[in-house]
Length: 234
Ligand code: ADP
Image 1 (cartoon, rainbow, N blue to C red):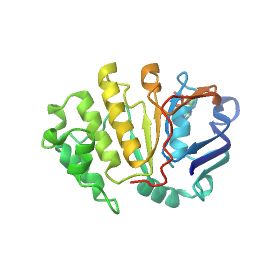
Image 2 (cartoon, rainbow, N blue to C red):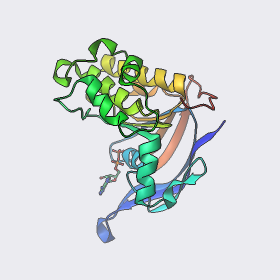
Image 3 (cartoon, helix red, strand yellow):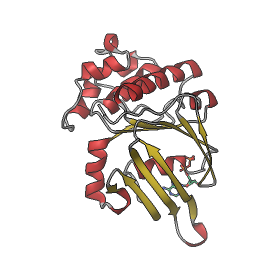
């Protein structure tokens, strides 16, 4: 099994003096390539902070994160931007689609900055939206808009997919559909996928569930669904 991320004694503090917030406090665990990991825990327990550091959107205060042979925590902003652009797809709770562009045009925007992207048709096909390709966001349901956001995130064939409450604005059934799309893509192409969720039914769809509290990992559950032994990403 190839390790995707190795996280060691990772800590993140925001602010200074009496105002200091310890968002992550000595977090260590490994993530294997191709895993679908669910991050759960109370609001404020550090889940988004971890996602942001793994995604190169934020710097750690101390500790180390390796992505393959690269020490992410040693990279400066420019190198982190390249890492993010090449390797990371992000999906957030709110879909952030451009209202005046169709589903296909929204996906096409990201393809322009990628080296070897999927076509917009392929990416939208993978999330079951071939028929809706020419619709504008306002003509799509919340679940469909989120699947366009998934298509946009995967169009550059990222090795890593980071999803911060991707189902937070959806009802359970629609949320499960979005997760099924993410799970299918994770199984078929081996992109290491991390999903922050508050929903226990969604969390059970992962290969492992990592429980956070007070900036620490308190427990890791192995689920029935195994991690893929895939060496190949895309
Ligand atoms: P979760 O995703 O589990 O809800 P977060 O990682 O967003 O938790 O937040 C962890 C802690 O760090 C919280 O106390 C939060 O208020 C704080 N925090 C997060 N981002 C910032 C920031 N940019 N500045 C100051 N405090 C922050």
